[in-house]
Length: 131
Image 1 (cartoon, rainbow, N blue to C red):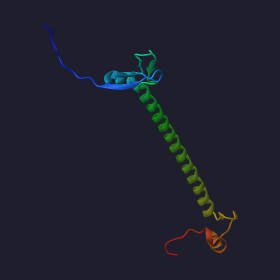
Image 2 (cartoon, rainbow, N blue to C red; image 1 turned 90 degrees about the horizontal axis):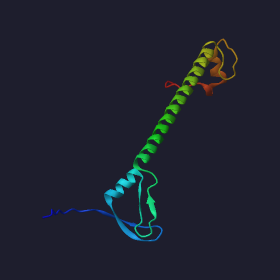
Image 3 (tube, rainbow, N blue to C red; image 1 turned 60 degrees about the horizontal axis):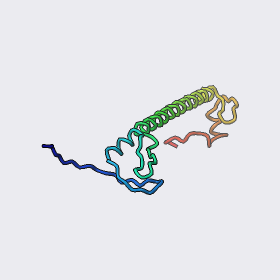
């Protein structure tokens, strides 16, 4: 006496791009073939069909892209930090020159730099809340 059992199989419809034959493949087989990058043959004309890249290949490529984006982002952050440091050094140098009486606009020395700035370069003065 033989044992009998009942099962269900989900099939995915395929149409051959060469001969136009219509057939079905087990969905588990199709999923595995996509994941591994393998393929199947048309039962009518025996043409081989496959997926160009496996799921692991796709994920590997996505990971490489994300790693490249992260490296580029880190490089941009470092570049912005260096630009900020350079600008800070320029401002410190300018502040020192102004403290020593050198006009930042016309680069001449004055005993009373505040008076010179108010008289000759009022548009260059910072706006303060009490003005």
